[in-house]
Amino acid sequence: MTLFRKPCIVTALFVTAATVSAQDSVWSVPVSEDDRPFLLHYPNLENPDGRVVLTNEFVVLQRLWVPAGEWEGIHSHPGNQIYVHIMGGEWSGRLGGEIEYWGIASPDGEVGWMDPIPLSAGHESGNTGDTPIDLIYVTLKKAGPIADGAGHGDQSFSDAFVDLLIENERMIVQRVRLEPGWWTGPHVHTGRQIVIYTKGGTRSERRGDQVQGLSKAIFPGSAVWIEGTGTSEAHDVGNSGDSPLEFVLVTIK
Image 1 (cartoon, rainbow, N blue to C red):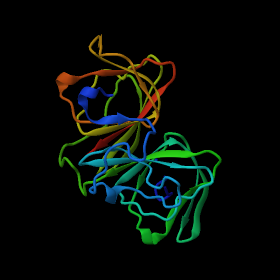
Image 2 (image 1 turned 60 degrees about the horizontal axis):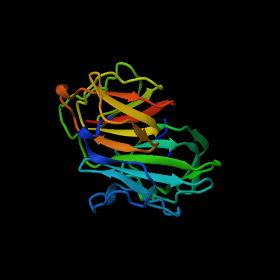
Image 3 (image 1 turned 180 degrees about the vertical axis):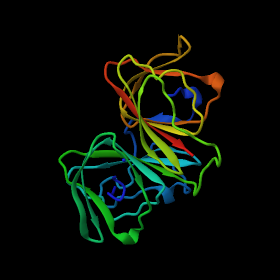
Image 4 (image 1 turned 30 degrees about the horizontal axis):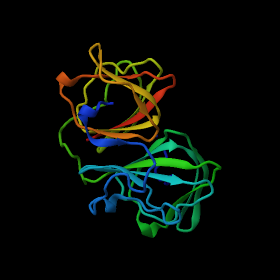
């Protein structure tokens, strides 16, 4: 975690990795040696490696918890990476043993971009607030775009609140919010995407006027990988609960 960075479903038919939410083990999905160069290690914490919640040939998602009053310990960042706060809090940072920033508030759902930071920089951040911080890092494994010339644009949802958070040569990051009873509007997915839920609730899906299956409980921190869908696979996602449903949508270029 650092202020170098702090400036800014999908149906199971379309996913190639499992939705994950339960805090049931250190590694929730198998981790290969190919993943390890992209994983963070916080040496001062009781659980220094957190939990990998999704991995494939393009990305790895790692969930980490920083208790109140704890510092992560000196660590590196591989770059080409965003963080998503599931539960925000108060961050302070040190660089080379000197205070870099202090008492910066990061709200629930805050997203930011991380450039590479070598271990030799002596970078670490600490939770100087009084509540735990829970965040997910999304790290790209490829050095360049995974689909050159694909012309990815913002994902369009006609009937939801959508904010553009980050756009660069590697990804587009949007926040999508559905109030109770709202639907996104029919849509397709044009590229490889990740959904990370920052506010849980109850999710439904339909094609045309036909609801698909049962409503599903969604928990904050749940993550889903989506492959692109064709125009014949348009669907509509709705909030069938009684509280707002919110997710971060990452489109990989």
